[in-house]
Length: 236
Image (cartoon, rainbow, N blue to C red; front, side):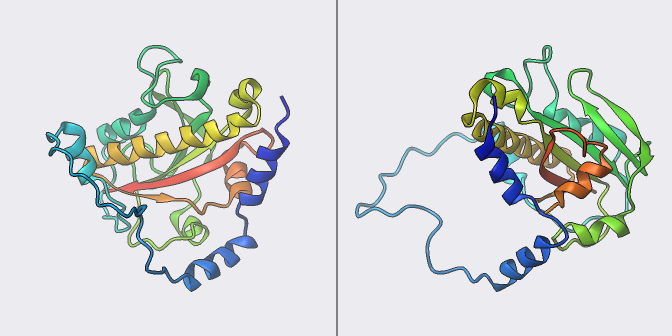
């Protein structure tokens, strides 16, 4: 099913070497106002009973955006666990995150700079077999990648996880509404990766300013229907 409105939205939101400069200018000029990051009502909220602390609470409390990375490579076991945040548990249709209609539009790639056994390679993560496929071209260097990220980072991350989506997997069933479902799924994957990084004692930060066309070429997806969702830098 054709979804022209979702296509227009993703085209308008895509970053390249031209509008990335404008985005940086806008971000630098932004001055937050006094508004609170919650809704306000005339009556004060009624306090709820103190919830019992769960394992998820403790893990969520450890999650944070960290832009300073050390020099040690990511150990192979921790790298496996990080990617495993998007794995399939029991066949292709049961994974760690929800997806509309079980269609699973998100795919993960890893651009590795300091990962035990995989430094200098670009990997596709197969969530069903929980394995990786090394792409033929080497990974771009961190020095070449850093200026294109649109965020400030200290040190060298171990890897950049790039999440791409194939919208037609979902829009074929749900039409334009499927575009919203695709974005919800990408958000669920982002949270899973963030929590997995915290669980493994890794540092991580979401990189939302990746240049879409450039990265799709790097991943060999520029002739497909893939769209860029987000990046996630991880390291020690």
